[in-house]
Amino acid sequence: QKEVEQDPGPLSVPEGAIVSLNCTYSNSAFQYFMWYRQYSRKGPELLMYTYSSGNKEDGRFTAQVDKSSKYISLFIRDSQPSDSATYLCAMSGLSNSGYALNFGKGTSLLVTP
Amino acid sequence: EPEVTQTPSHQVTQMGQEVILRCVPISNHLYFYWYRQILGQKVEFLVSFYNNEISEKSEIFDDQFSVERPDGSNFTLKIRSTKLEDSAMYFCASRKGAFRTNYGYTFGSGTRLTVV
Image (cartoon, rainbow over all chains, first blue to last red; front, top):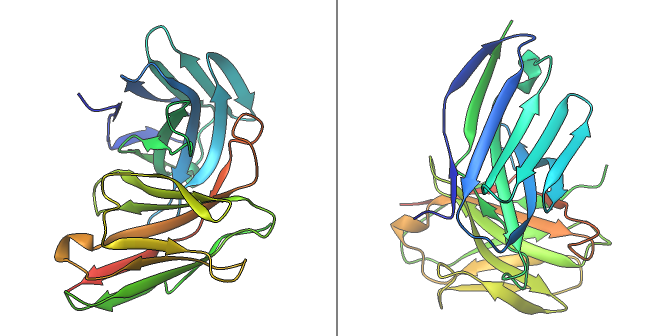
């Protein structure tokens, strides 16, 4: 079983739509959860991070973590064409002494005008 | 805004040759990492480096790989004898402090390594 699963999409939505992205994971030791945005041939850019369970909001972005279900989500409100990118979930836990990140494969998002 | 700088952006090398990928992390960061991304696949952890030593490495990071921080600013990844399957985008990343208080990694733009 893969540690982090993420639907690769692609996901196409009209401008202004609410986007829901999610990942599931199998390792119960994960405690730190992140969402990165990656444009083509660029490095990942940190969008959101959450420790343990709960919600976190930052502008149009909301991250949710449900550790009981081993499920994390990223919601994007009022999506813009500039949000078109690949979104990567990543997570880490105490089992990693260097806090190495375990990434999902990424979901490709296209927001059309 | 401070950034992680990687050079070169693209390197082509022949199979069996040694390559060195270079990174300049953010100056006040203490933790350094190399990740790679094979085309179409997920970003994979290679190695983490703290206090001038490797703190963790993955199964990918075998004897063909080594890392070094030679001068307090640069952070390098060396592949001794490249194989075709080493072709990938290699990302350097750095982090400022304790994971609990500062989760954020800053990634560089990557070096695309092509082994022919």
